[in-house]
Image 1: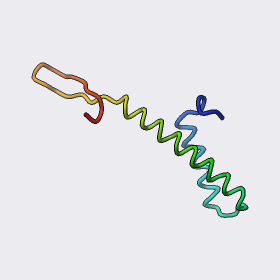
Image 2: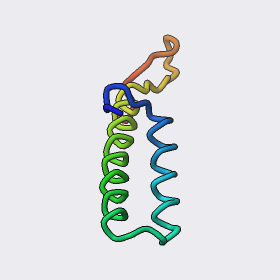
Image 3: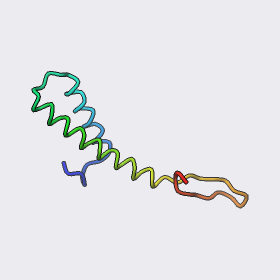
Amino acid sequence: MANEQLKFEQAMTDLASVVAKLEAGNVPLDEALQYYEEGMRLIRFCTACLDEAEQRIEAVRKTESGFVTEPFGD
């Protein structure tokens, strides 16, 4: 599945599946390496999604003149 079509939730589900297969410990080394590479790709994708979401979050702050929004983390 291409990254443009992959959704965060599906990537997390796929990652959990990869981890379960690796934790089972009954896959040949070559296959385990492929799972590892796929898992790392999914981790990078999920991290990028979370970074983007963090940038979009706005904190609401109450001031004397009312409520204002400011970028998350400022």
